[in-house]
Length: 408
Ligand code: NIG
Ligand code: FE
Image 1 (tube, protein in one colour):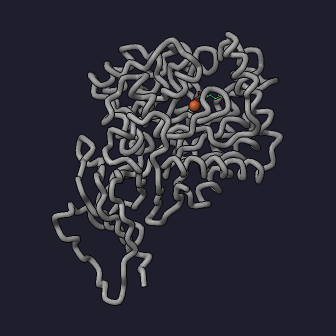
Image 2 (cartoon, rainbow, N blue to C red; image 1 turned 90 degrees about the horizontal axis):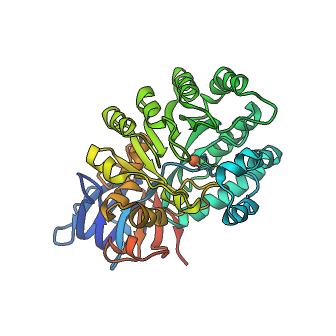
Image 3 (spheres, rainbow, N blue to C red; image 1 turned 180 degrees about the vertical axis):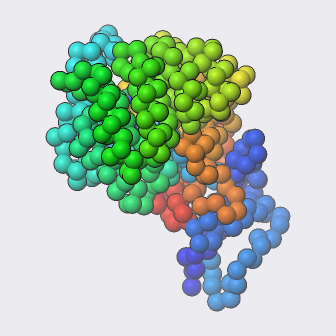
């Protein structure tokens, strides 16, 4: 009788534990899972320790010959829940319009706001679940999900409830983020809207979200406004995070350091003083190379400088209908290497252990006692995960010891 509470991944060509400073490679290894958690990682030459009586039980075993096994991917920045798409804007951008021009003409985020307000909660859920399933097929086991396409209290809460329900579906761990300060809605001036976000939305969202985010740009919420919103979030127990210095240098990295943000995203044009302050304050940089590519931005995140300053670098997809439609973390890692200049090791840590740090989660590693959130890939050597451009290497996605998705 196979005992479903014990799972062995045997003969793994490499296990990347992500412990220590590197990938923590263990060659020819067995991963033993008990009750959904990692029990041991054992090189083949050692006997797998028996930590539970097995008489009468045959543990379920999966032969992982020729496979790299690593932590399930953590995607620390997504806008997974939204109504509609924006293919027409994509076409306009290819014809030469910029993201900012489209946003200022009332398109961009505001057009998704319209579609999201109009969508029923169960429709948002069904569409979100389909995307989550696709992410799971690409190996994601933890995903951050932002609100921010409601821009009124009712719809912001609707989005956060959908995020929570998506987590309950069990495909992935969902970390909900309140992003009421994503844009200023039609019919509002900025100071009134900022007050609504701080005084009404944040207290209402506090029970549903873990993080508070803001789109900090001179033409959206400037550094002072962003600071006020993130401080209001902190008062209600929401951890600060920020969209910083993406379209224009706007002092976002400085704000991140000043408010003690857990992470700051985008960072295409941070000031050097801002980066130093981030390093000092221990803010994790969340790199979004897919967005940079999708928007054909002129700048790249200054990763060499971040490395020099010892800033922890995570990598995310930024999946959303406007600035990046990528939802596959292996591809984000490929962009991070080829487009930004990360090493393969940095990129793979960026989508696992460092991405977990960006969410202040104790995850993204394979160590005894941790949840068994794992991917089994079809490549024999971790370098192929980046080298095989566009290839989906994921054969199995395992969450809390259960196989969630299996490649055809
Ligand atoms: O992270 N920059 C702000 N938020 C998203 C874009 C959202 C959208 O265009 O719908 C981003 O790129
Ligand atoms: Fe974003």
